[in-house]
Image 1: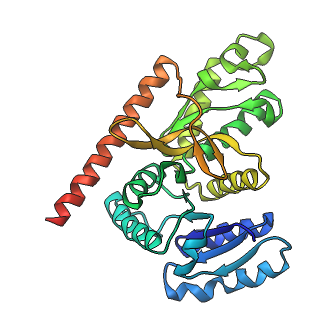
Image 2: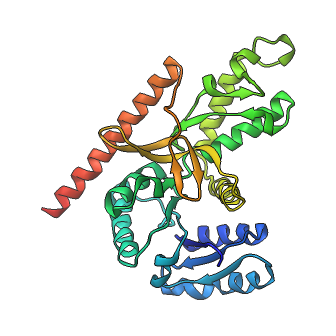
Image 3: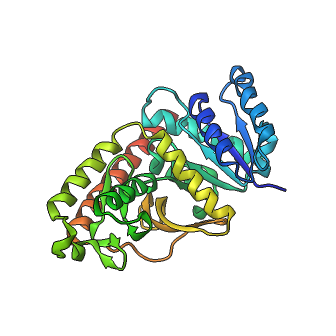
Length: 302
């Protein structure tokens, strides 16, 4: 029996993800859950197209499929941007639905603010922290990796980039970025490298600019890369949004092992002094945002 990958989100994003999955033809049973009943017939051409895929199948699902799902990929639920409080309220409804229908798989958030969605999904669902994660800064890490490889004239496999925090405000951890066996900061000392600290600063600015753009395709490419690794029993250590055990609890992108069981913490995040300060400030902002949303929920029940 093939693993079941459920997809939940608006039609535009869900159909794009399914199209990319059809091309990769991974050994998956893809089950799409339409946002509305009107969307159901719109998926029929993708269901028909899957008939020529030797390994991947596509079908429209029902609530009973939640209990059989290996992964549930949650895309943005709205076509237009909405307030975080609205998205969290919608998430609570979804979590109640999947738990009631026996969901025991992994929740993967592929939309905006996945660090908030990861935290509140953990809070609402009762699932274990290792079952819930978001793509976080992994797509941007891949983008930076290939940009560095091109700039330095090496293969992408020689680059080990480190980007942590959140996808909308990524922190490039140059102190944990390597070119081959050498830290990139040591690599700068090589006169033949043709690369300077100023180049690093420009590249970080470029990555921040890209983070503000619409990166749906990039996120889906990252998701497929992770799924491919897990299905081939070659799990990756990457920075995805995951539950942090510190008090008060929050979710942010830090390096973890992504495997068939979910995410697994391997070691503590170690950054330079400046990077740690930027990370701490960002985490405080996340905690403040979580507190504001939780206060809004409490007021809404009064």
